[in-house]
Structures are given as structure tokens and as C-alpha cells.
Length: 85
Image (cartoon, rainbow, N blue to C red; front, side):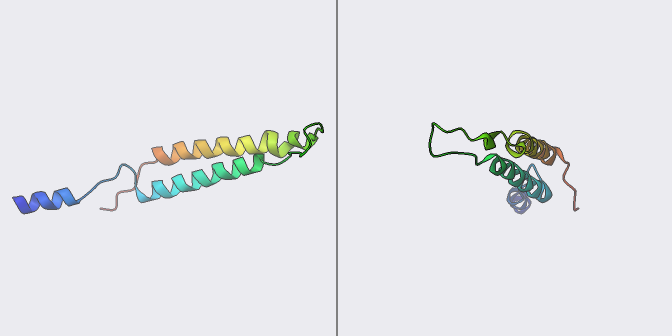
């Protein structure tokens, strides 16, 4: 009986499957891309105004990409892992 218990102890079941972790990584990359899209538009002189900070990319596209990344993360966590038994 001790031998069976040792085999059971060695087996570790993770909460998420391998595919879930891959999807989580993809979601993190999507979120990083969204934040990169928000960058730029800065000026060296604080007395000058750069209207480029209000571009479509920074105001609309980037937040949508980040939001999609977070939704993708939630889906990746909730996705049921496949059983390979």
C-alpha cells in the first residue's frame, strides 16, 4: 500500500491545462500590444501642445485591444481543459 501512496503523491494535477496556459500567454501579449499602442505623443517642451495624443489609435483602438485582451484572459481561464486520458 505504501508504494501506491507514493505514486499518488508524485502525480500533481494543475487547475488549468497546458492549452489554458498557452491561451493565458497569448492574452498577456494582446494586453501588452494594447498598451504599446497607447504610447507616444509626448513633447519635450511642457509649454507646447501635441494634438497627436488624441489620435484614434490612442483613444479608441488601444483601449479596445486591452479590453479584448482581458476578456480573452477570462475566457482562457474559464475554458475547460481537454482530458487526454
